[in-house]
Length: 99
Image (cartoon, rainbow, N blue to C red):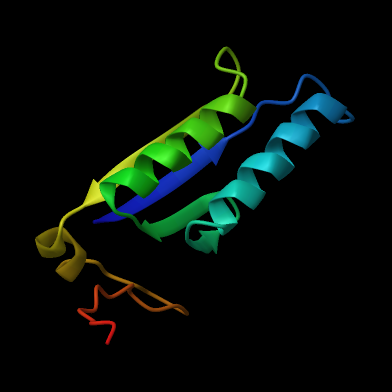
């Protein structure tokens, strides 16, 4: 399944080291799971177990009272309806077999 994941990390002030650390951690975690499409938006192809692992990693980093992470599932039918204007490509689900 493909997931669109976006996040918003709230800063108390411009030089908020705790928020900067959370922001960097969330970004680094998501880069391990998918492709960055915009500054705070990722596309990830995840099996159920990897999605659970990702959610646990993110949960351990964010401040639930300040930050927001949204995970949107995209079925194959919805994926085929994706429109890209400008640069970029639509992510594809490819069948493969390891021999």
